[in-house]
Length: 364
Image (cartoon, rainbow, N blue to C red; front, side):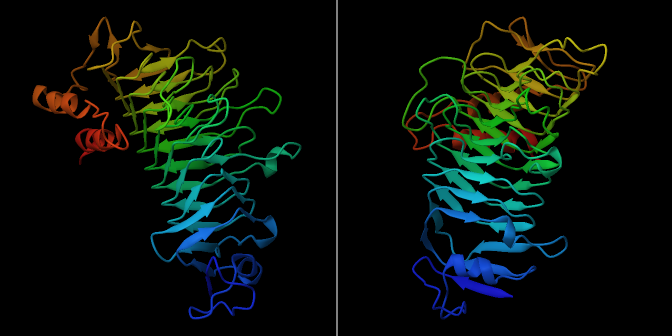
């Protein structure tokens, strides 16, 4: 089943390619396994309610026909078993309350709070928390709340269930963190989130407002409030963020931190504190991570408490402590250094540099 939608169409259209209908009408008509195709243009604030969910094995799809499909205002996705592709959201948050959804090639920017957030409403049981959502090849940037201390690029925080995953995503120039996996004591711990092959850079500022100091602007913030959650982060880059590159944010859980690189973050490149529960819960497994400094000095060495540590090259005593199994050849290290030098005159300072670093660090 295919239904075509245009931002200027009304319910009078039959949903064909020549006579598109409205999005509201298409949502009510679409059967499980079907696809809504969005024509280019600006769409208003929208809610995808739980009543229009797909089913396991027959997800519904919302797909841009061109390269200029944009929602101006908040988009609330409450449904399950949907697949979005190639859609932009600006001037409002994209909030996911549903489960078993896939979001591919999304761009969120200019929101008055976090750009892309997975969360659940207050007052519902844990079994109904947003779970098993996958975000792929997406970007979130230039999001800022009025206080300029809360807006993240991506967040899976506050009543989040199991199985949420981010793959090959980029977060930059957000007022607060690149990724925020915060949970509240009163709700209990979130489910474990997986972040793979992703980049966080220049967070703690926006394209319009430079950083004014304070404890904001982490690359990857992996928890909160002392609740143990076994998040996983692999093959990811934290670069030139205003606070820490990778931080537990007081998460004493059994984190998996593997094959990541942290470069020139303002405070710590890696900060994982000693857990008060280390006798009861294994602290975390760290493997093949690297920490580099070229243009941003810090008074802090990396601080990493762990259960297991294998072949990590953390920063200590003014230099990266390479190991026999985890080292970088001098000629490659020089290329990485040159790529880390940010050209502040570009429209998105650091973006080209971050992508160049990713290519150098993770090329097959």
